[in-house]
Image 1 (cartoon, rainbow, N blue to C red):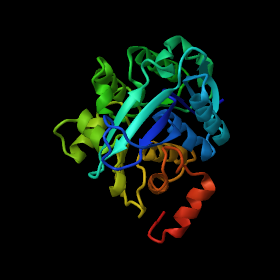
Image 2 (cartoon, rainbow, N blue to C red):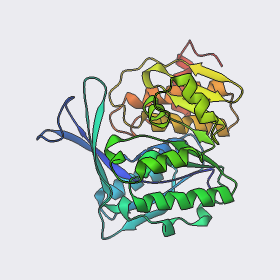
Image 3 (cartoon, helix red, strand yellow):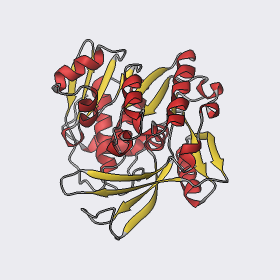
Length: 316
């Protein structure tokens, strides 16, 4: 039985070596790196000692084997991951620009992730589940939206909370139904974990404080707002808190938000004070961006604790 369950894409990332390198032109790339937003999240939660399971699909190929090996090594339950002989593992190509923005090219809908169906989600997956976590990037096709909608219903029947990271990807928003699904799931979630970009998408035209109030007027009782280099914020119906960032050298920001979100939830499940949950999430994000590759900077409890111990400005 797993305390946290997630459903979605398992991929490898192939990263442009040079900042500003166009995906439309020849260039040098690094990878493949095990990836997929829900996979990054699951990897981090498991590394922190939370029993975590993921459901999805990979191809019976070298990329799929690489992703599954990494998750298995970190302690993630991958028994609900389908391995398809007649499909290839999903791939995301990514490039970064000097202003901090990123561009992605996804190969998912016609690869193994796009073959995952609602019937692949078993009620047994949610036995003992406390949190079912959803990534907006997983809502990339009608079949995946159907699978996650079924998973939400099963999780609710099992008594689990629903957590949602909208994880907005402009390239995926062009797919019919994706934007609507993100809005619908946001209103059906108990815990929301947006970035500033996500907040602007969910609450267009609203300042941060007003947007937090809007989110808390829906079903959500808690909001963990990821602010990247500016740290993070927390809001519920009784309090609002801010946590400063940690100094770090950014090499690769992909996956840092997934890692921070997993750390926040893992810490909260262990009944840590919210201030400590925020500090640990920020520390995990700082460690994540300092390594190239979406999962390569994920941290276990010993690494995270050692990092926090070195930081003199952290007060719990």
